[in-house]
Image 1 (cartoon, rainbow, N blue to C red):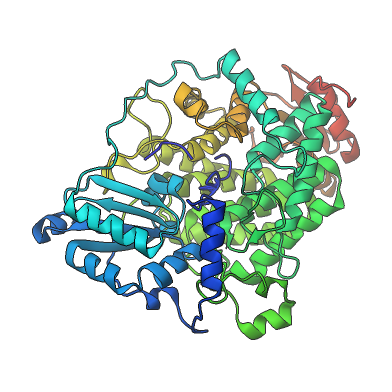
Image 2 (image 1 turned 180 degrees about the vertical axis):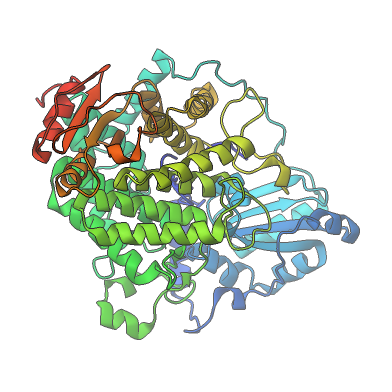
Length: 627
């Protein structure tokens, strides 16, 4: 496993994603992908055939006694790590695992295990760099023999299986040199400069976005660019962010809304049609913030179309959100023509399968996005959706001590991602409402993380799962999770005043500042740069003083939440509730509702008009005027 993966969001795990958000790496060349695609499209498939039904392989689950069984039966183990929404996973079942020769070899010499990667973040995080499907081969003792990324042609698979049966030795050395983590919770000046230069260097000036074969919106890169545009008056970063956001609109389904995962070919016109929650949630959050920053109605429309999709397709009757929607209306067949149809014609052919698992992590992404849209618009429907989902997850996925399980019944876990992204979501709800119960729940989540996921090695970073419950090998920290955890715990420190959360952020930063981690990617490095920047300074701080029942105070609070930066601390001091959670500033009781902007160890004069808040905050932070 590589200990890396992307930012506040996910990553292309991914999100990662990921791939840099979730599962973008298809694992074969563009030429090979097109060759496979052509072959499949010429192949007649039964209209109602499901991918798994065409497989001749008998699949079992991943269990804790898997390798004990393998030793008893003197067999190797093959793990097919798939995604329910993944087109090429369906192709593997229909074209490779339906081959009688392959099925026979696997039946005689292997225990075959198939796992939905969304259901097992421990396995997903370990093998995310291999994309979906990821195919992992083990000996009977659990040692990795070989790993393959993406679709494997039948002949290639047959040859590989026969080779491993004949000579079950690892293709590569499994031992890695021990990483020596950074002793400081900050990037060195040289590394910071190098990452910043890469952020600029690899921007695609022609097509927008960054110079990858797969085009998608990297939330960290956009937020970092908007931060530099705001705080440093950097017009180039402003145009980089805006042009990418405009290009990304090509990945929003014009009929149903929602965001396709990515586009191939180095442009934004060759969409792959799966819709996964990490992409929906992070796009929703970033487009909401971008609308406040650029005042561009296209970005609000984009955010509203994502929410419309979530509400129409992924919202459960209970109010929580499902996980994803498949790329294919017919399993294994490309759906480009289908997604060109209008709503009526699509529905005549059927609707791509929706994964109706309700995971805490995925709901955390959705809730944070909805909270951001509410703050941008003041439309209470979005807040109601976010709070209803959060309350359902709290009632049905909570663990003792403030954490969250992944599903109703986890075969492993707990996993860092569930508690992290629910914690971030609840902090977003506190910012959106001023309701201190949400802050208390966010703190409980952070306390659970600190108790269960801390890395014992040099106290650098946090582990992807609880070591006490790992069924495969010692879990490791992931870049995809330590970036959002650093940002969450650092902001939570400023809201609460609890030094423990500051230490958590610094632990994450020591991991991220380690040379091997900081240099793991050449591009899309903005998540690390955001962490480094935020930990070194206080957020924009706006406090509303006034009764929460006062319409004037309510209007000021909404205006404060519309200050166009992501890194901000917005609070509501109602004297009836007593001192603020982090009482680092004394506010006078006012004869009428007022707003104060505090920065650089001083606070502004009171502001009584919402339209004046942004200028007052800019002055308090000594921000340069736009060039």
